[in-house]
Length: 312
Image (cartoon, rainbow, N blue to C red; front, top):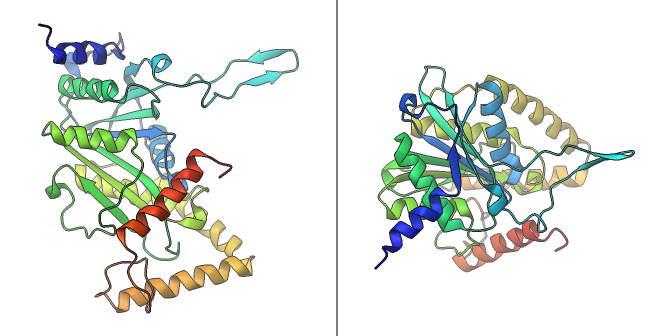
């Protein structure tokens, strides 16, 4: 009888290839940051973070995935340019594993590209194979989620992991909430089931900035990754961009009285929470009751439906 695990492994290994110029024998172990576009990333948190790391380092492509078998092109058609009488080359979708080094020379990896539409379990098995081959023992993710918080206060986050030792004593904001699955969340679950370490940080992005680049969230995600991995990652360019972004947001809020009042209300709610730490959530005001898990889940699902269906 054929071992089903062998079939799974064969299916997984057919989805990726190591680059011919990558000397696997010389590749060093290190943590892996996983960033997949296409689901939810309030404030463009994940994309800003990955772009910063790739732009500030010297990334080397180690492996690539067969996106032709993973992407629904008709469901999310890649953009092309038509130039007068002909089509210009377009940026082919790609799911790539990069090797980089931090400022101390420590190797780390970044897996970045579109979230696959198909074959999630096979993709996860492929990622596990790559982790075993390269000696990767920790997978880390960071992305943004919309929250009713002001941009003028410290950026919060929800940490989740396969082992609580990876998130220290971070207090949860949510209770038990049912949300639509993403490949990153399923990857974390499957890695935990196979006794591997994985940790993720959902950065709290002010809901009114969810559709705009919010560099402070990316900087917060970078700092969280540094804390959990011990990597010495560059942050100067991202910190400078965050300062400029902060000033731009302040100008726009100052020019719109309605938005300014909404931000002031969020500030008051946030400050009331700090003065009454016995209340368990930033989502409630002084006289409000804590929303139930079902209510939080419903609000989050409503937002996610707008992500999947822009006309909703």
